[in-house]
Image (tube, rainbow, N blue to C red; front, side, top):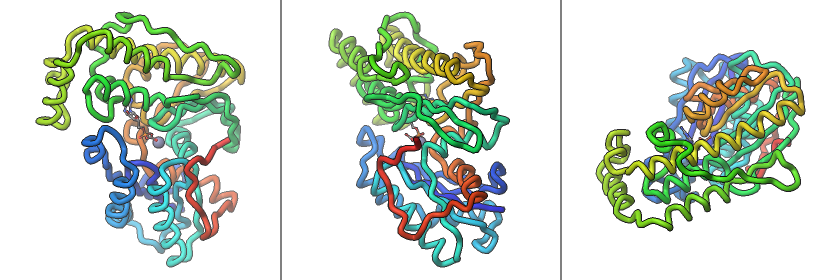
Length: 354
Ligand code: KG4
Ligand code: ZN
């Protein structure tokens, strides 16, 4: 059984063919990062226009690479939300057209559920599992029960973890997205060099908050005159859209490396502290960490070293950031249950998983 999946919730146009839940026959991602980088973040209007341009060749390539035609498909799956409304619309409209023309069932998938299946479809996850979805748009902690039923345990009250990485990166002149650069430079700084305080949550103590940490980095920045080094980094970016670590190190003094390392260390502490506590609460048998921030080397290392009483599963790097293979994987249980969407399916910018 093969499913063609389409994902267009943010700034990647993606299509994939997945067979029998877990075999990824193809996964094509047309990234718009280079375009948005010029504006320091995703520009929604430009994103939808790019999706329109990329969707046909991306889907065609995914089918071609999988050696699949529309006749071989059991269903078409598409991201219903959450995400940018104009971006979601492109994928949904295209998926509906394919479903109508080729008489295929249409399956609507929640993007966050996709991130969870990026891990669950490729590993022997045991239930109840704890799922930490950390990306540019989400920082959510769920209990995942047998049959993929979800219970929300905590979520961010302000910035998502990836958003905090991106804002700090932008503030210090590292361009967009900040996450991958901070990840590469953090090992060159002292994670205890700058003492940032952890968020003290009132109410649901499994919720997250990163705005205080972001403000603390801003205060640190404002207390010093960093205009020269920031200007040097901006000039570097103007010449090399993707500088190497060595090039970054030439324009980044030790004090700034220390603040990056300390910032990343604090984010990881926040994430793992709550994962540990909720894992105890639900007596978790696995921990899934997924989403773009799951690419972070420091987070992977710390999670492995945390000696948690259950295995921790990360997606492969290609399945961590947005892709359509995870949407295809998440569609299989719905296919088995006959849970299909109508051609009146709408994009839902704020769709919740639970
Ligand atoms: O899952 P994703 O591709 O898109 C969303 O659904 O948001 O995640 C993108 C986010 C960005 O904020 C990016 O900075 C962050 O993931 N990210 C990282 C790393 N790679 C990507 N954050 C920290 N370390 C990384 N290595
Ligand atoms: Zn995502």
